[in-house]
Image (cartoon, rainbow, N blue to C red; front, top):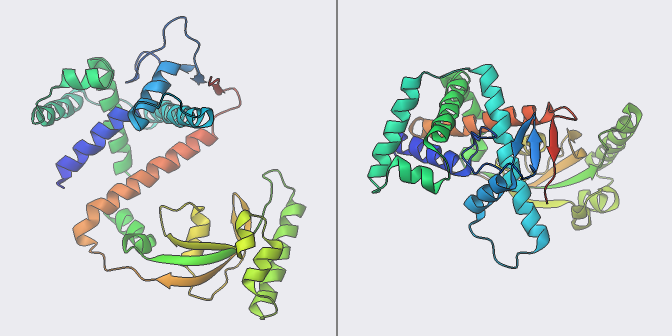
Length: 323
């Protein structure tokens, strides 16, 4: 895929899902009617049920007539999360980037029009299909361009190469299999409680290293998660994306087969990890795939920015009232 085609795909995907939504009256999705009660308010920006349902439809298509209630609510929550992220990102870009030259926005819209006409469509039809006005589309394109400018500050050649080396196992498609023992520690745990959990795992590690305990049996006896009864077996998993915490995955891939980690702290608690198997990957041509590495670095950067913005929301900065 060419660089231009890839950019086009990313742009259309973002606009279709409304991930750069600009809030009440400016988002790419339907605006709540005056009598409608918002299902969320983010720093004063209202998000309507109509907006949420539009994103839900974009992701999942038309819902079955008898969709289970739990599944329906999960879909709505996922869609609402996308819209909340859009508001947070817009406000972040206001602060970090500021305005974009109108000529740059117009150029991007012209490129969109050229690509759409190759599919026998035009910008008006695109706006109709994505339920937005030309002005709303212009606002969304502006945010995409602003994000691109922000990301370029960090996606230098040096940073891209460093990212590749850090995640080389991922790009080469290597995987590891591991067992773990986890002791859950609440977020509000005292320093003494945390020290006690860490100390217990350090003691277990010494016994495991000395051969006095079998790791699988220790997991069955001490691990505080459902996998403990399977000896803590996590089966094979990649470097990223992974269902596990980044610190956990990084620690696992740093081990050779048979090695046991030091105590690893994650948001879920404290862990011991033992790698039981490794499958090497295949050669990856960095020079030929540098653009792909850069795209993944930028995706990770966006997730980190949003995570920071979500964490910084004050108690009264976000109100949610999903039906």
